[in-house]
Image 1 (cartoon, rainbow, N blue to C red):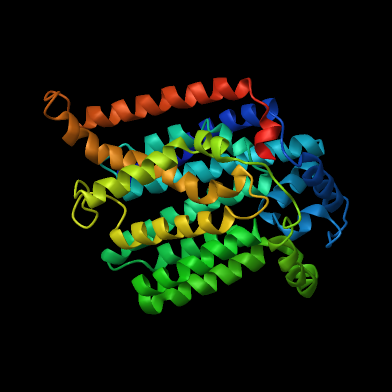
Image 2 (image 1 turned 90 degrees about the vertical axis):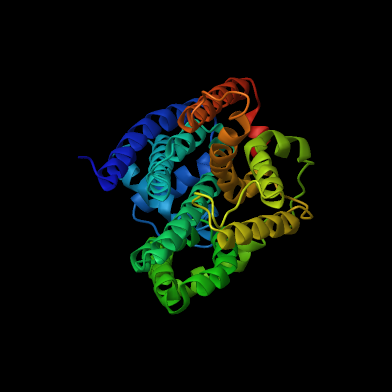
Amino acid sequence: MITNRTRGLLILISVFVVGFLVQTTLWFVFPVADEEYWATDARKIAEGQMLGPADVTYVHPGTTILYPMTALVSIGVEPGDAVRIAMAAFIALCIALAAALAYQLWPAHLWWLALACILLPDVRLLHGTPPSTAAALLTLLFILLLLYAKKREGEGSSGRALVYAGVCAGALLATRIDTGLFVLLSALPVVLYIFKKQVYLFVLTTVCAFIVFNPHLWAEPFTYLASIPRQIFSNTQLVGRKILGMFLLTFPFAILSITISIAAVRLRLLRLATDDIPVPPIIYGWFLGMTLVFTALLTPLSYHPVRYFLPFYLVWDILLPVWLFVLAPRALAVRVPRLTPRQCEWLVVASIVVIMTIQIVLLAATDVQSIIL
């Protein structure tokens, strides 16, 4: 008999393989923002040069994606191709891990499949610069790992899950220090409240992972630490354009997810504490609050392209199937009594596939570079 762990491993492998093929195709078809910067710095490192504050990618630091690019350049891959291949592999791995976690969190449902169908062909991942896209996916993984740790805490074995969450948080800091700091500092109070004394495991692992994943700290730690304010305030002089229309078109799933969840909770159609839902009230409330705070802080800035909103709104995208899996059978039970809950889930998944296909077709006729900037 196949165990949940074996099924999770099969999901991880299969989603990674499919994801790598799909993402490689997308990254080689559509333009890549800031490709020249990442290709140039990957080539420099492959040639034995150490980066410094004068190099464009240094402040991010983006080392979780930069060094895989460097490894590819070192074995003879063209720098531009190395950027695309490394990003496709990174995205595929993050989506595969997210799908496996979704299965472990809610094994009796098709959440893992719905999540994969949303993220695998997601052209919005091309709307961001490499570190922005990578940070969005690591934020999503971090939230799923917090949910997993909370589930394990109820079973009395959350220590290992907290270590995993710390590794992910450290990788996020080493990818985009500004996004990572906001997510980490906002998460610390809720982690402390839920896990009490075990919070030291999370903090210690986060710090260690940040150091391990960021070779800039190995060479010149003080120089890199001094560059952090530069990254956080780097775009204060830039002026963007109005993005309300593009924002609504980019995050329809997320906006629907937030709206449905709030309305359903207030109307008691969703009972997070008692329903079979992998999102406990404390994490739901915290993440909803942080999403609103993040949006309120970012919106007044003179430069806030759509990609800056990805870390939080991508998470709401993959939570939408959770609400629909619970609410759809209840809503359709009277009208279509023969429709089983599992059939409702398949209907949701099929709808996601259709919508994502339409999105890809629309993007093919769109100026992707204008969306990025």
